Image (cartoon, rainbow, N blue to C red; front, top):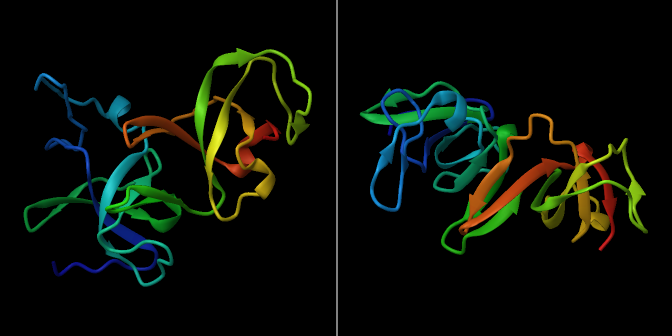
Length: 189
């Protein structure tokens, strides 16, 4: 491929199937194809295979699978018959190392398993990091990026759910991610 990326740009193709309008297509277990709707299909972070990286990229390499933040990619374009997109390295949350499937988080990213029950009051050992609200959603930290403080290892974090589109799937498990400054409070492990 004769393309070159500039600066910290990352050229990629989505792992998920995308139709001619750039909308994600979902195929059920039974083979039914459900066409995507841009508003719904793009509001989730998506996995992409990296095709080209700019010279300023420090963490991303060609051939890796990258988890790209929701709505943080360009409009698709075609090159030599292939649909491609562009993002910046800062919009990549994690790298999936093939073939092991292990995740490498970037910067101050935290991956957690969400708790479905809501919490209405603090428990013993709750450490306030920000301003907590009644009925705050919570989750257990499973992975931390290199810039996340050690004390959040395996902690239960509380966060705001406003505009929270950070749900993704990895190894058939539903996970969520958040940046460390967005954590409201936490309970140490």
